[in-house]
Structure formats: structure tokens, C-alpha cells
Amino acid sequence: MSQTLAVLASGGGSNLQAILDAIAGGHLDLECILVASNKQEAGALQRARDAGVRAEHIPKGPEYDQRLHGLLTGADPDLVALAGYLKLIAPETVQAFRGRMLNIHPALLPSFGGKGMYGIHVHEAVLEYGVRVTGVTVHLVDEKYDRGPIVAQVPVPVLQGDTPEKLQARVLEQEHRIYPAVLQWFAEGKIQVAGRHVIIEEEDPEGAERRGS
Ligand code: GRF
Figure 1 (cartoon, helix red, strand yellow):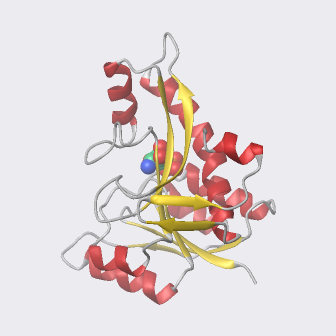
Figure 2 (figure 1 turned 180 degrees about the horizontal axis):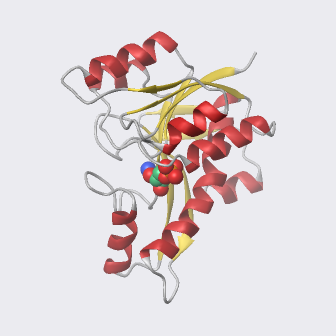
């Protein structure tokens, strides 16, 4: 039987879609049992409904963290993937899913991460700074934004004439490849966490390429 996955998303949900497509295509051996969002109008919720996956909106308010915690612990997924989820996860929930809650960030952490570094702002900051290489980071979630142990990184070159939107599109392409691949490593039990260090069992050359090493 497949392990189960819950996805948290605040936006359009293209990463969620890549995950759902990988599951449907037989490349990702997980069952997505829940998609939750803090935004009622999130495209991600619609994508979940279209795929026949339970979709839940959690309204803003003082009980938000508690409700999210209850929803996740009630559904009891093996893994949780944050995919464009714009809120900090409460410590109690981080603790409940430590080592099995992932986030994807559209830059090479620890650069261009932290509060306020989301969406197009990340790519604007990358271009403004003038770095030559940006990319994607998949990391475990801890109590701070974008800080948990890094599982995988993929570099994306910054090109002459890039706009934030062009760069975002090229980075997203890589996000859609790496996130389902990383989730599959978890599904196969290939991941061990030792403090800040993540050990990936039995790497093939393609896997090393995917991680950008
Ligand atoms: C992605 O760039 C992801 O890395 C970031 O938010 C964006 C979400 O995009 N955390 P989408 O909603 O998956 O299309």
C-alpha cells in the first residue's frame, strides 16, 4: 500500500499539479489524501478537487494554527509537502511532522530566503543582486522560514536579458521535476536525517545530477 501525502498550498498550485501528475503517471508512489490552503480562491484547491482529492480551506483567524494542526493530525499523512504555502507552520505542527514535512523554495538557500522572499519577489531580488546562478531548494521544514535541512538543490543559470517572470518560469520547470523526485526518495525510504544533514541512500548518477551535485 502506498504511503500518504498531504499538500499545503496558497497559490496556483503548479507544483501540486506536478505531484498529482507524477502520481497519476506512476512515477510517484504516494497517495495524495488532502490538500489544504489558507486561501479560499487558491488554484491549488481547484486542482485538488479536479483530481478527486479532498480539498480544505482553513479560514484566517486566531484558531488557524490549531485548525491546521487538527486537520493534519486527523488525516495523519506519512508526508506533508508545502508547495507555495505562504504561512509559517506552528511549532507544535513542525514537531508532529519533523523529518517528513518538506518545502520547496525557488532559489538556492540560504540565499534569497526567509520572510518576504516568496513568489516573484525572490526572482526580483536575484536579478537585482546580480548573481549568475539561482535555482531550486527542497528542504525539511523547521520552526523558521526556509531554514530546515536541505534535501536537494538544482541550479538554474541567470541569463542575459532575464526578467523576473522569465527566470521564474525556468525555475518552476525545475521545481516540477525535482519535487516529485524528492518525494519518491521519501516514499522509497531512501532519506535519513542526521541533524542538519540529509543522507540519500544509493545515489545513481542521474540522482546526483538532479540534486545539482
Ligand atoms: C513556487 O515557486 C514555490 O517554490 C514557492 O511558491 C511557488 C508556488 O508556485 N514556494 P505554485 O503555486 O506551485 O505554482
